[in-house]
Length: 156
Image (cartoon, rainbow, N blue to C red):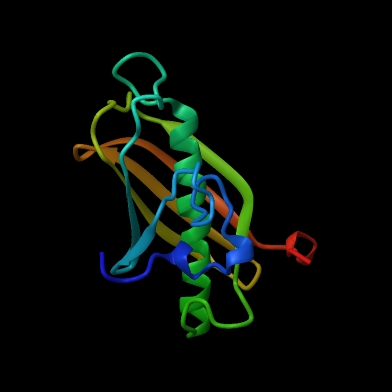
């Protein structure tokens, strides 16, 4: 995609998340984008993301929902404020609550698609509903309640 991902707007000192940090070479490097009113991300699980042979580990799915949710929360907060992403003051969100329902086994060896819908956007809290699909079949759904990052988490 030609456009910048939500996570690419995070300042360098806040880009180390294992799931989506652009500065974490060992992480997933998840990238989320707008697709109309929904957010979308794609991820190809590695062979070592295995639960049992042929199926993806559920913890990976939870971490993808988590990071796609907080990225979508940030983007939605900027949209609601009528601001461009990355403008100061930075609107960075962290996980307040994560709920995941596994609906079907997630097959290994296929790209996963995450779709997020911001359902509530407030100044300090954003709720995002997310689905994870493999080959067009929804395998998991989740909800992230993201809260504005507390000042105590900001690098000094």
